[in-house]
Length: 367
Ligand SMILES: Nc1ncnc2c1ncn2[C@@H]1O[C@H](COP(=O)(O)OP(=O)(O)O)[C@@H](O)[C@H]1O
Ligand SMILES: [Mg+2]
Image (cartoon, rainbow, N blue to C red; front, side, top):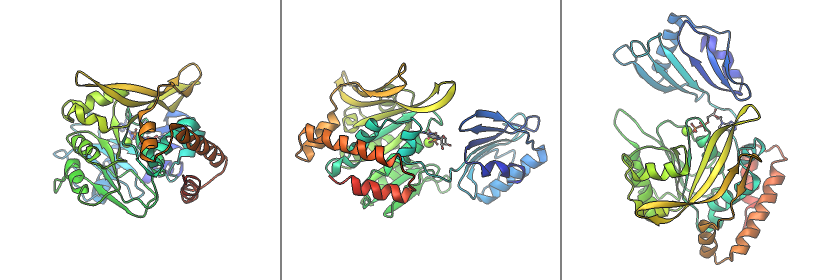
């Protein structure tokens, strides 16, 4: 990557942006946010970089074919736009591949998630082995949806057969019975085709990165036909907007199908003490229908004053469903949740790699 290679050595650099030869390269740093650098690329160097990336991806770019999406050998994602579409010369945006996959404890330790909400999500994701929940992770661009889904997926039972469906392969799930599917432009294979195919692959779990269009209806069809434990990310700014997007074009999910969705988990980028931090700001459930519009019950909400995610006290429907499926009392569910909170609290004080974390979850999560 020539002059850009130095940025790949620092795992705290999340994104690398080149806006034109007149400007220095910008980077987005985990702690310092958007930063200027002293690196500049000439027009020739930038054009060569884009051509190299295109050729690595088996693609061609030119002024007639000016948009490029691709990956780098290390797994980083690249988007490039060439003139004349991009006015100031080539524009290059690199979303860096994180060497270290984040687990739930990383999210708790960085304040994204509370131990209580994480234990609740753990119970919902494995469903205590009785009834896993269908969950959508929602938020704006780059607010951490994929990272959150990836981290929490480690709570799925380890022998599950998992199929992931994505436009660009970002999910890295540490499972052995895993099939990763990716859409393609040529030949044209879209998310919806992949989702329908997945139903013939005997999946225990279907995980969709970024639900955008008609595949949303297929995902809800799967949820409604007994495929519990489906998860996906969706671009939306509130839980309300998430369900509204789902029932309107181009997703067009019939409102009655939304009942199969158990949780919407909202993540946002907030300013905490002058720094941008990612926080889970809401966990909601579909409470029921009012004139064909889903009503939401908020189970967890972010308290801006205290800066913490807290329970609202609204009774959770998925808690009842899981308890009933397992013949447990709601109190027994809460006891398991408490035990898992203390497990998380212990794990979050240790430094475990992904394998170690997975083993601990399996060992300590037994019901
Ligand atoms: N909770 C978090 N704490 C710190 N960094 C995070 C967190 N979540 C995501 N990131 C980083 O932010 C960037 C964008 O995250 P990503 O999950 O791809 O967002 P999205 O899927 O919402 O677009 C990545 O570089 C990722 O490593
Ligand atoms: Mg994403």
